[in-house]
Image (tube, rainbow, N blue to C red; front, side):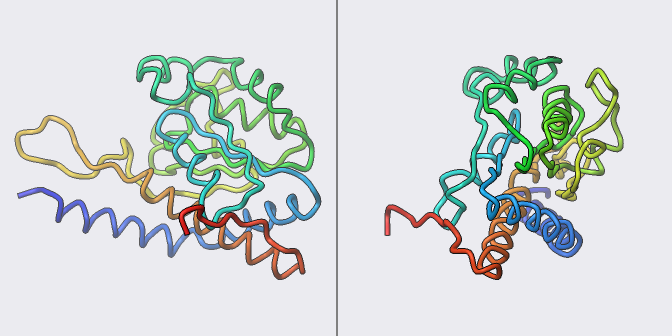
Length: 224
């Protein structure tokens, strides 16, 4: 019978695959972030829908980088309604507003998380950031994004707009487990694996900064 045990096995296998295959991309991405922070530039994190949780994973976290700037636009998150966030993340032009408000600029690095990588806001955010001279790290599911069409006006998907792509190794649709009697698959992995990948990125950035003789600006838990 399908259940938690099956999910653990399959989810951990995806996490292991990501750990084994994405180390090179994480090292390249960490080099970009370390270079930016050492040069006084900024490291931004952004995601829409459930992917906003990965921006929060990088932001204000014990053991994390104090210099992360998370873009947490309420309408693109979930607490104002699933339908609202789903519609807004497809809205052309909204990314440009967010880029202007947050003043992303040349030399910055932006991590954009989007499992499908197909909606207008994350794609246009990446394009706008690069137009301003920033470098873009995409965290996405390559299996999902290459199996679907873009909703962005230009027809690009997120991985096609990025300087570095980190694959969360998830399946199309994100959910893994087929349960007899249930019409839909259950058990998503994008947030679980994504959190692991951005924490690995953080550790690599801290190591790169220390190697440069910089003192990494790392947050300590307020509960210690």
